[in-house]
Length: 277
Ligand SMILES: NC(=O)c1ccc[n+]([C@@H]2O[C@H](COP(=O)([O-])OP(=O)(O)OC[C@H]3O[C@@H](n4cnc5c(N)ncnc54)[C@H](OP(=O)(O)O)[C@@H]3O)[C@@H](O)[C@H]2O)c1
Figure 1 (cartoon, helix red, strand yellow):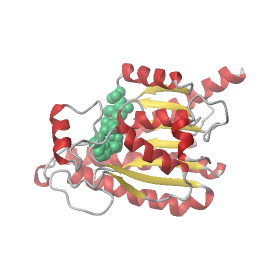
Figure 2: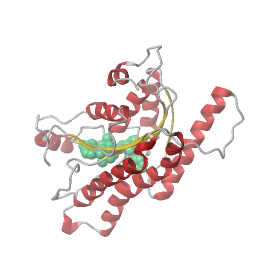
Figure 3: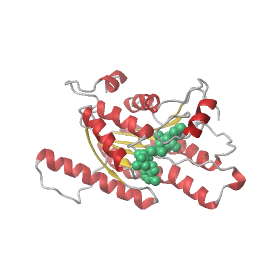
Figure 4: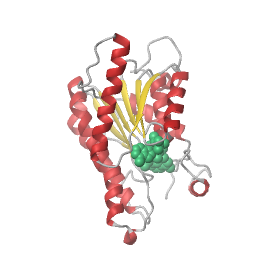
């Protein structure tokens, strides 16, 4: 695997790129941090399958951005509302890969063929603020399912083929300050689930690290994405040590470093300029 410089600067160059031939599925890859990672992965030569929630426009814009970089990508939309959505995502992913194989090799389209990615980035992770004694059962269920159960299930889905191929990269996203066990005044449900991702990553590292599979968690600081409204941006500015929120690109550059290094495994990495929320 080549250096980080290749990830950032390899776009459009004719020499073989570090992730050429690798297939990446980016769940939540059409906006925010996931989108920036998808662009950098494409620049590093990976074939990208983008998953987005509901915005056809954001999906089209991200695909165009990848094509403009000379990258290869396909994508689809699927609202994540339960475990079945993860099954649908892998089924859509298989169809995308099968279509690409059909187009590039003129092979017969075999719809039942099941493909699995070499690289899984699970970026989507909804946030909700609620003080502990006002957090409803529905909120607990939603935030835990979305931020721990479903990423966990997605990891279980991709792991067998990564083990078989003896190569795999999994990247998950924690919350701000969930890199250690801490207390949170108004985000206990969200932050509990996000903190649990560290156990998931370390479990993968323990079970599959010897077979070339890595799984890590990045815990971003307050990051301004296109989803943040002015109230969120003002909060981010006020809380951020530098008086300025992180950009998704800053987080994505660290993500690429983590994905490039086999020796980083089971790590929970804050990328937050030291912010305390
Ligand atoms: N932003 C921050 O300040 C911050 C701080 C700490 C941790 N994090 C964590 O970092 C990760 C990335 O966060 P982010 O703010 O960049 O973006 P995000 O809102 O978690 O993800 C955006 C992506 O998810 C898709 N999506 C949105 N709603 C969906 C739904 N109901 N079902 C399926 N997909 C849906 C979006 O597609 P559409 O555009 O089509 O909806 C887009 O592709 C998350 O896990 C988050 O918890 C973020």
